[in-house]
Image 1 (cartoon, helix red, strand yellow):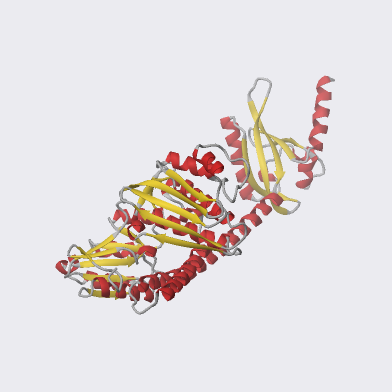
Image 2 (cartoon, rainbow, N blue to C red; image 1 turned 90 degrees about the horizontal axis):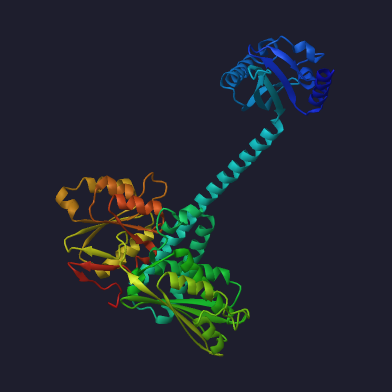
Length: 509
C-alpha cells in the first residue's frame, strides 16, 4: 500500500508539472511519460508510449538520432546532461531545453534515463530578435562612426593645415592672426568633439588602461591639455566664458610621468573651479603651459571672485573644505592633491578676493619616449616625400618647408600605392636620401601609412597622424621603428638642416 501510494503521489506531481517528462531503459525504450508528453505525441494515454523508441515516434529522424546519442552519453558516463534540442510539439518545430539524468535501481545501477524537457522556443526567439536588433544597432553605429570619422578627418586636416600656414603668412595684423587662430581652434574643437563622441573607448584608451602595464606612463601634456580645453569649450558653451591657451614653444613636446585619467580629472576640476568663480558672469579662463627645463608648469588662471586665505590654507594643509564651492573653489582639490602626491607634483595657489585666482601645478619633466618625433632632421641633399590624402596638408607642408628648408626637393603623393611604386623604383643610394612624412589614415585606399613604410623600407620615416594615442598604432609603428608626430603638433615640430635648427615662421621667430 505504501509503495502504491507513493506511485500515485508521484504520478500526480508529474502531471501537474509544466514540462514534458519521460523515462527510458538502457536500450532507449520508453518506460513511461506524463500526459503532456503523450498528448504532444498524439497518444491517447501515457501507457501507449511504453516499449516504443524515439525512432517509433513522430520525431524527425535527425532529432531521434540526437535524442539517442544524448541518452547513451548519460548512461555510459553516469552524468547529468543539459542540452537544447530541436523537436516537434503540436505539429510545430520547437526548441526545448532538455535535462537527462541517470535512472537507477535500488542497487544504484543505471537502468535508463529520466528526461525533462521545457519548451523554450519563445525565449530563444526573443534572444534571436534581441541579438538581431543589437547587431543592427551596432551595424548602424559602425556605419555612422565611419561617416563621422570621415567628416572629422575632412575637418581636422584642413584645420591642421591652416594652423601650419599661419606661421608662414606675412602681412597679417596681430588682431587678425588671433581671430584666425580662434576660428581654427573652434573648427578643431568641433571635429574632436564629434569624433570623440562616436569613437569606441578602445580607440581612445591609453596604455594605462592595460592592467598588465604600469599606470604611470609618459604623457604628452600639451595634447592632453588641448583635448581637455576642447571638452570645456563644449561643456560651457552656453555660458559667456572663454578659454585661452598659451603654451611655450618648447612645451609642446614635453612629457611627464603621470596616470593620465587622474591628470585629466585634476585639470578638469581646476577649470571647473575657475568657471564657477565667475558666478554665471562672463570671463576668461587662461591655461598656460611652460617648459622650465627640469620641470613643467601648468597654470590655470581666472579673474573671478577669488579665494579667501582661510580656504587657501585649508587646501595647502590638506584640510577638507566642507563649505561647498567657496567662491567657486574648494571642491576637487582633494583629488588634485592626491594626484600630485602620487605623481611627484606640487601645487601653488595665489588668489585675491575680487581679483581672481591662479593655480599652478608643477611636475618633473621626463625624457621623451622613443615613439615621439619631436624634430625633423634633414640633410641639404635629401628628398622629402610627403604622403597624405588631404591636399591642404600638402599645401601646409610646402609652406613650412619653403621657410625651413627651401632648397630641399619635395615630392607629394595622395595615393599610398603611387608613393610605394615611386620609392621602390629608386636606387638604394637614392632611397637613403629620402625622408618620408606619411599620414596613417589613408581613407579607402586599402592600406595605411605604416604599410607604406613597411613596403618601401624607407629608413627615415615619420608617421604624421591624429591617431598618435592609439595603442595599436604605436605598437605597429614600433615594429617598423617609426616615430610618430601628432598632426596637431606638426606646426610646432622643429626642423633642422645639416644639424642647424631652421626658422619656422615667416618672420624667423
